[in-house]
Amino acid sequence: MDSTTGTGTKSVNQLVGTVFGAVYVLVGVLGFFVDSDGFAATSGGKLLGIFEVNPLHNLAHIAIGIALLVAARALATARAVNGTVGAAYLLLGVVGLFILDSKANILALNGADNALHFASAVVLLGAALAADKQVVTRSGNSA
Image 1: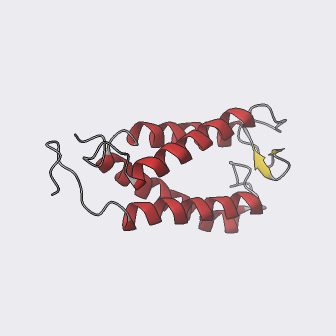
Image 2 (image 1 turned 60 degrees about the vertical axis):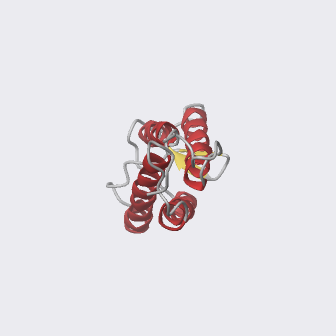
């Protein structure tokens, strides 16, 4: 029973992946309703009046959200993808600090985006590294 903790309930990593995945897909779709300066413009429209987005940024949110949702179906993949996406968001947060006012800012990042990326990194990495230490095998036994 590799899709759950072995008890019929979802693991912490599966829940985090499902929630974050759904939110990121929703944010990505909503971002297309915000005016933008171009596909990979260095500035963009503001989603919720705070977060700058452009179409490339929206597509990234949708792709990451789908990856999290698909991975959330199984504990081991949820944990691995949460860790990978968390690490990527940590890196993006750090890089974002240095590219805000440059032509390299093809995702139209701003300070609010960076703060959200750091917060996402903390939650996703925290779940991946601290929760669900016992990996469940296909037979449902702890490994």
